[in-house]
Length: 182
Image: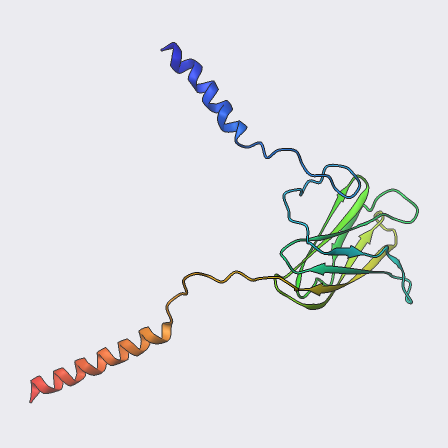
């Protein structure tokens, strides 16, 4: 009986140890990245955001569409951190995700796997409630060099064949029934 009592905590501890994913990888600022399990693109180059012709911020990004993300870190010009943020319009050929890490707003972009071309999205950055919003337009140049898109080993059966078989079967039944009536 005593063995069972000791085995339960030992068994629970071994299950919890299986949840340990190891140390988080380091982000661009040397701090733990909460999304360290996400793949980073083999090609990820960004420019520092600068004021464009209309006063809004602009930045360029070069990324490979290998199912990895590219990260751009931004901070308000007067320091501190952005209170809130969003994306509008969203990228057409990928996904953008924003989060705060150590006072920096991290803007991540992951292009659709295998896509090659340009993509654009705008991050809306809010300094504080009622304050001016910064608009950062990111123009991404996406490259698909060397990207292989996995193909399924088995394809789903075509519905056209099933419908054709049903039609043929109905035609045979009709012919058989007509012969029996004669």
